[in-house]
Length: 232
Image 1 (cartoon, rainbow, N blue to C red):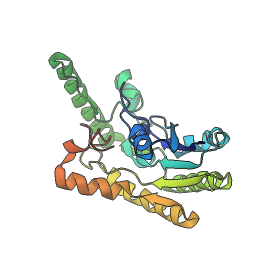
Image 2 (cartoon, helix red, strand yellow):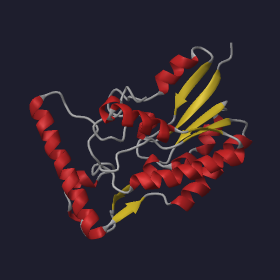
Image 3 (cartoon, rainbow, N blue to C red):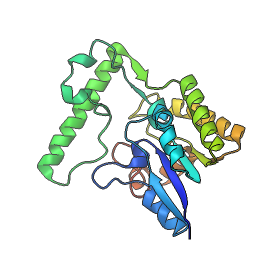
């Protein structure tokens, strides 16, 4: 039997974090059993611009379905790297994602304490940059909309079916200003899905409901951004 192919596109939420790479690939594969093969082409820290960059590689694999989960990194409001403060903070905190809250902590006490101090420093440096230099967004709404539309159109033209996913739900206290941007970007994703009559999965509202009911810890890691095994 020839199996149909599904390709997953997205950022760290789709690729997974840490050595275990917790993601929904295996969950999806298990639910689909032997009828499909799932290939995860997601890459941590990427935006919809990366999907456009590797579009030819995606199409060359002849997927029957492509599931897109972009917008989480694109829309997020971050400390401004172009100001006067960022170049002067310690080098380790200038790497991508190192000013964001930690998703995990070690079970070893001394290592965990070091990680908690690290997380406090991340927060302090972020707040300092916000206060002096403001914020930035890696992909603005118009570029996101234009690129997302292009990627969907090209995939459909190649014969693949597209499943578009909203962003996840995140903690606006930990990521100030991002939640409103997620809602704006999700409207664009939904509109593009409707335009091309693609399936649309509203992860944002589904996760918001379960968090409201059961709390963050049941479905998310400590950063309240990356879903844990309960959330995937």
